[in-house]
Image (tube, rainbow, N blue to C red; front, side, top):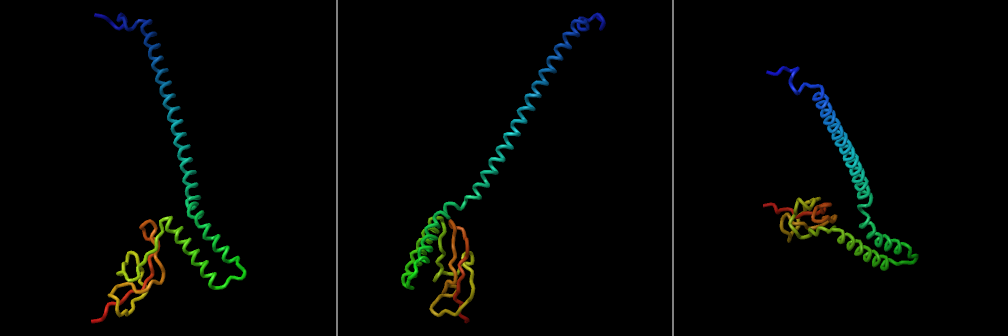
Length: 173
């Protein structure tokens, strides 16, 4: 039987070899941990840089979101400015200029997805219309729009502003 003093594993050379091997494994583990820590720090820095870039891009998008529509509205502003600059314009020419300017404005609005709600003669729709008053309206079906006080608008099929309307009252029985 062998005793711990006589076992081949407990010789000073084998202990030194084990310590050297353990030291090498420790150094390798420390190197791996340092490399992982550096990679984590780099990735964290990259994520932070990406977050800052996205924040900057979002701010730019908010700042210039209306650029296209405002650029298109410049022609409307120009037309109004030219009309006001005419010193001796009569009512008829001012009206004609206003009509042309309104057509240009409607073109710009439509090009950007804005469309008017045309409810006159249509059944009242609480989703798109705001009833301002009920009136007796012979010749009109009950709950039918008989007058439009303010146009309503849809932006890409989503209600932007309801039409303010007058609705025909149901006849009392």
